[in-house]
Length: 58
Image (cartoon, rainbow, N blue to C red):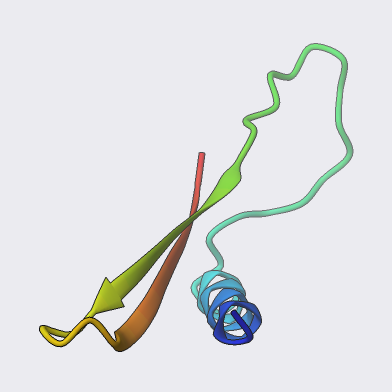
């Protein structure tokens, strides 16, 4: 669905503006936390798409 890209960009923008993370060089002693996108389509009572929800989770 074309709306997913816009939803992902909006979520990434919110994460950046909230300073959710800091990037720095990786050290071999560090444990890196992986992440993945979770997508959910919210439907109206008639079955049409209400909105798209996405989250980047660790």
